[in-house]
Amino acid sequence: MNLDFSKLDGLLPAVVQDHLSGRVLMVGFMNDEAFRLTNETGSVHFFSRSRGKLWLKGETSGHRLLVKEIRTDCDADCVLVRAEALGPGVCHEGYASCFFRRFESGRWVVAEATTYEPAAVYGSTT
Image (cartoon, rainbow, N blue to C red; front, side, top):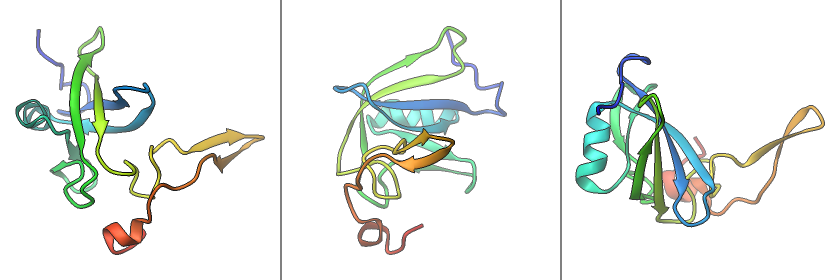
């Protein structure tokens, strides 16, 4: 069986989940090369749609994701990466997870505290 990279122009969604708690940490996209590098190195790699290039999660922040297990869905067009997060957070905005907002009473609210200061890690808040 091979993964199906054809449905999204050579990419497939990669859901990253904490291997112990089951919490969803982030969603990224992988092309064939990012998937291969993830398997070869044991660290999660993605393909950045906005930058048009491969990237290693944590290459700037040091907040890497170590692969514990990879699964695919029934259509083989999406992967679930169960990983160990190294560092205080996965989100570039300073949160443990990219899913830190909750829809409440018709609007989005921040539902948890930051775990690190992005400016100290990235040099800016972007």
